[in-house]
Image 1 (cartoon, rainbow, N blue to C red):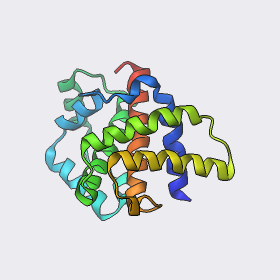
Image 2: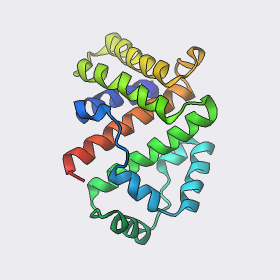
Image 3: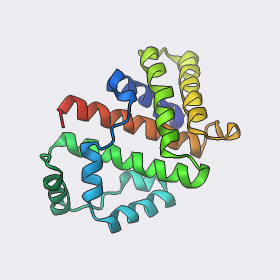
Image 4: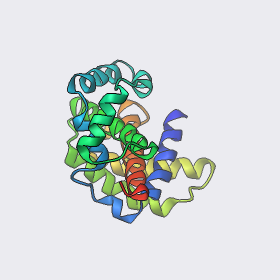
Length: 183
């Protein structure tokens, strides 16, 4: 049930990102800020995410000074919007790393998954209720998983699909925030 909730949210947010979001940005404001944050803490976050997805999603390790320095270095104003975009980007990175280590999924594979999922998701909104919603979400995620290179045997509810859904959800969320806030 949790996977369906994540996938449904991914569908809605990917739709909100709009048609231009299907092409990945080389460097987004959130990715710039992320790269300016202390590597030791970013690595520590990866350890936390690897230990427990739930713990990782709740962890916050960066100080206000570290964040403000990173914002300044990237030429962005600290705001709720950039904070939300940064949080989504963190999850994108963590899911990307996990999928790469456990399934050999590349960044190019995730970009292909985004391209495969985003147009379908936009056409599926608003999503129907009940069993049809489940089928729609499973179809979209299945296409994304195939494009990413996740083995067919692992395209079932479980760790790989949950992390792919979280990647798609947070990429859509980040792109929508950055686009709407002009950051």
